[in-house]
Length: 112
Image (tube, rainbow, N blue to C red; front, side, top):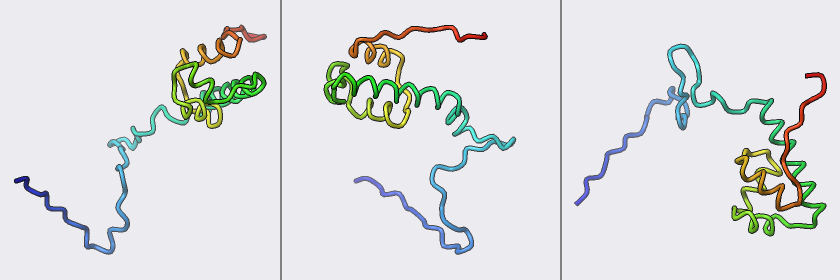
């Protein structure tokens, strides 16, 4: 027979609502749960790439499910990438481009 853990509730009214997940702050005040997340420069690049890939897919008259099937990924993966800029691997981006008749190349920016 398994022993059940006793769960005690906070009864103090001044304690306020319980925080879920904690803050992850160390002695210096750095919130380690959020370090490396939400960087605007990389987020905008991924969002722009996702929107561009969506436009190309729609011009090719290919549905999300058709492309996902070709890439062997879940349709939700593509939807998150195209609509919300959720990061995906470079391999998926490369395979998406190839499936749509494009290739992925690096171009040097002018003035750099």
